[in-house]
Image (tube, rainbow, N blue to C red):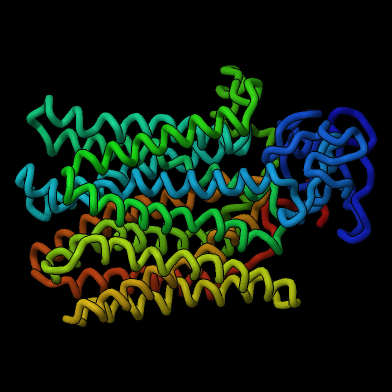
Length: 502
């Protein structure tokens, strides 16, 4: 019996028999009927349930609703594989990829302009480290609440709200620097606020995808959308370097901010209707508190070793990625002063795009071939954290620009295998609260990122050597990898026998 009191059809045989159903609860452990946010005719990744009549599902087919966690069937909505979705859903995937791209365009503006800003405002390495690391102080504060709100009201709304805000902030930043004399304080505050606004993005994305993607398709879908991080760094690395040389650092901020606002406008105008853009204030306020009605056993959840394994691995990989993202442009600029910025700001991220897509394809292919999910997740993580760290260590030892580009490209490119490892493992373990749980891990990553980014600047300033920075990256990655290899699992832990018998 669904929460609304109506009989619910049985899932198709290909997904196995149904578990015992309790009134008013979802089989994934949540308190509301699955897809309860969607109603007849509502937009689900761009497809309307009424487009083909009541006998057709919201994805353009007639397959029954079945989630990997055997959630309760909602009478109005049904799930199909992304590969079988109608064109509107593919447009949504492209738009999410573009959103991730623009997220990183805005995030990397300061690292790209770090040398120019240091020269303009007379900052030393420690002061630059303060500005660069301040982003992560804000970034860690909105991860958990952003994921929880997304689980309640829908990730797409949270994504668009945050993108609007960080787009305006990016455009206004160079304008406001001309009316203040406390440039270090202002830029630190600006980066902190940018972190607050962008902190909700990936938890919202995890929440959105965990509810709409099957287990054996998660890696490729997440890897596809995740390539936006490399695309964004690539775009701002190439176009930003040229704009920096031609028109100054201010133009890089204008370029990134205006593109973000254009993306928000197009998404709202062409992919969402008015009703979907409205968020009732009372419902938003209720979602700010973690209700006891969610049926998620939090105490038991955080007693599980696999949960802590994926959190430790996630905070390790996130912090080391942030460290490389923040300091690689400065490393190349100082170590190879005659090199062109568009080369070292573009090539590593260009390599990362196909490696990310390949890792997702390979992971899903191996799982479909019958390999255990956790075996594949750990294999991908060994490459993403272990092998990439080897190339990071090599980067600190070379004096050849060509070899440095190769090592940096290999390290950054192989890090994208994390998308098919721990990034989707969160969705394996707890699809009913993936957004919030992802936020917990990313919060830890942001906090450690603050420490690592600042510590990297301190090590460079005191030792005068970049080798210590890459040693730091390798050491932190090794800790996360060991934790995941020893305790990582892929079976659901967000339900217990008191609620659902899986």
